[in-house]
Image (tube, rainbow, N blue to C red; front, side):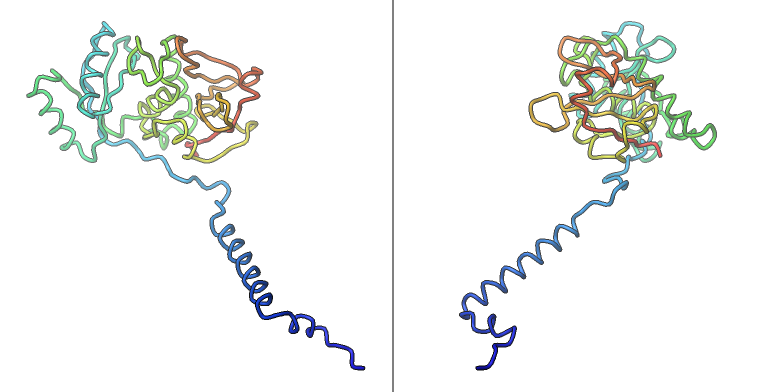
Length: 264
């Protein structure tokens, strides 16, 4: 009796089973191909930060409540304004991201005519710390981000807040600090987490952002600005103030999700 050839077992399989086997092989191959194609390249940011253009600065108030009222008025008009404490000790308000000085001037003049603002100053992109890195080096920008963040210490926190009475939400604080230094960071903590380059905890440098999962699900819900020596500045929670904390704190250590840098 002839011994069957090795392939005869397959050929003798009923035709329906043969088609099912072939279909499964092709399906598995297709799944593997899709997974490889969609795999992100390590070290490559999903989205680079946009450099901030011309902005409008209005007001210079010794009374913070005046800055609050102007900020709210501008936000109601969709201008995404934010206040900050200037190194002069005065509260100032900024808004806008215009490609040209002419566009910023046109908008500012229309707001003056509408009596929404009285005086204004056009902030040029060259005035931001980001634009001065060629002259002073990248460490200068990192130091300026930390110095800016320190000026918000002691401000009370409230989700979605935009005034020293309502405070800053955690991602609103980081967004404002970056904007004041010339970089357009997304507002939400998840949006910020999706942007930039992932870095290891032991490679953190001043100005990088650190992210945490403070809710039950293991996904990003909180963010702070790393300031060196295992410390970060953040808006910690409702009815609390912007403050400094340690990454070694057991609460933050167990909720740590990673870090991003935008300053390479």
